[in-house]
Amino acid sequence: MLTVDQAAERLGVEPEQVRRLIRAGKLVARRVGRTLVLDEDAVEGRARLPITAGRALAPRTVWAALWQLSGEDVDWLPPGDRSRLLARLRGYDAERLVAAARDRAERHELRVLPAYRQRLLDADGVVPSGLTAAAAVGADIIAAEAAAEVYCTQGVLDQLRRELGLSERGEANLVVRVPRYEGLQLTGRAHMPVAVVAVDLAESPDVRTRRAGLDLLAAALGDLPR
Image 1 (cartoon, rainbow, N blue to C red):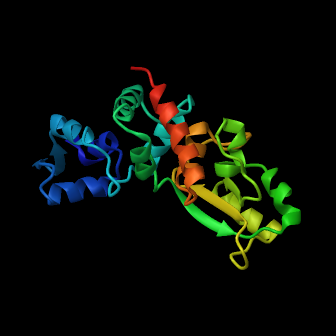
Image 2: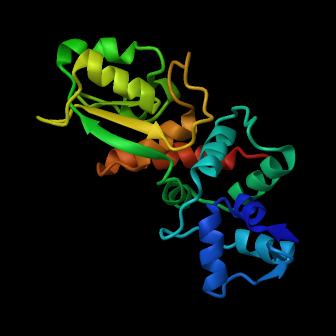
């Protein structure tokens, strides 16, 4: 039997989503004392259902998936959870993964003075992604005069706002994504891992950029050990 929190880990969602599934009759639970428990086999069966556009993975799980796809060490998940996550990823295609990853970060569209663009990109804790890192990860797309795309923590973003005068006013030329999972190591990276860059590209409204991201993701998924 699994607790609600353990079931949420297996499904890659927040505990409240598990409670909603229970209330909707899609998962059966019972009480043992004061604890709500679920059958492990039923939870595993739910985990094997396809990801749809209406279902997003919890940020902690999304980042683990993107890190694993990029060959990075996922030290915040126990070995058993990493193995189960790999098994789930083998059932994904690129578009399903993009849909499942949509809650990974808060997205901010901002304006930075062109004179400060390189200073921003060189700042500690600022990590290029999307079109800004496309060439570095081998994406088949050329970023000409594109807005800078980066990841950083909320604390770094607040500091950049103060030091560089980042603003919501004017035409945006900067996209900053703040991960919703705080356990990521961002300092010292030249760019985000390839699967992260790929998801960012795949969310673009531009057809060629989206295709470049989906192709990168498909290649990463195809390289997973069987």
